[in-house]
Structure formats: structure tokens, C-alpha cells
Amino acid sequence: MNDQNLLNEPCPIARSLALVGDAWSILILRDANAGLTRFDEFRKSLGIAPTILTRRLAMLTEEGLLEKRRYLERPPREEYVLTAAGRDFLPVLFMIGAWGRKHRGGGKLTRFLDAETGIEIEPVAVDGVTSARIGTRAIRVVKPE
Image 1 (tube, rainbow, N blue to C red):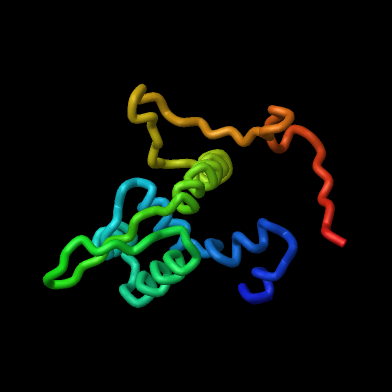
Image 2 (cartoon, rainbow, N blue to C red; image 1 turned 120 degrees about the vertical axis):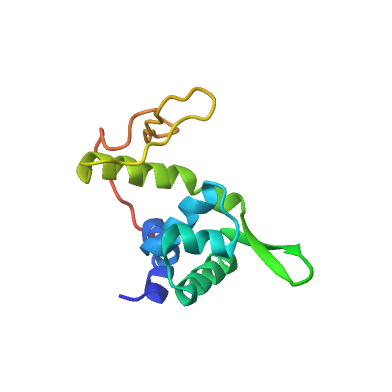
């Protein structure tokens, strides 16, 4: 199955994975949510090849998760700033991190703290309608007809 097929799936999980389902894209969004905006910052943080970074930044920009903004005219330099869609990805990142801490933990792990309180963030997915924690109740998947 290729990404183009996933984009046409009725499942929103499949469609989302078609856009941000590779590790580089997710890590770029992690770094952007941590305040990185410039190509060299992403490259240094990730140790990623410039060609791969260029492609991922272009895709994330084209898909509306990042926005390119010029910060210097001469020579022309641009930075990548999160859009609302990119900022909305932060809870997804934290849930992936929580899963990783639980099932892939061990050794020294990065911690995420609330900037005001200094307390470690413990993400929890909750259904906005019932207030039940996701994963504590049975689900039913209903595909469109």
C-alpha cells in the first residue's frame, strides 16, 4: 500500500499516516513544537541528510502543517513556522511519547515538563463527549457506506 492509496482511505488514521507517518516528519514536528524554525536547526537536531530534510519540510509545508516565512532578504533566508494544524499535532506527539515511555522505556529518557510548574507532563487521551479515557471502553468502527 502506498501513501496515495492511504490518502483516499475513509479512515482518518490512514489518511494522517500518509502525511506524517514517517519518523523524520514526526521528529520535525516535534522539533518545530519545541521552537526550532530554521533548516540548520532541524538538520543539527536530527542529524538528517539535507535532501531528506528539504523533501520533508516541503511536504509538511505543502500539507499545511508548516508555513515558510522569510526572515532575511539578503541573502534570502526562510524559516518554517507551525500552522494551527502543526500545533494541533502536539498532543499526538505526547501520546506517542507516553506510549514509548511505557513500552520502549529503559535507560535515560527525555522528560517533558510544564514550563510554568516544572512538573512532568503525563498525557492522557480522553473522549471529549463521555470524558472516558481512550482505551478503557470497547470501540466500534463504522465505515462509510
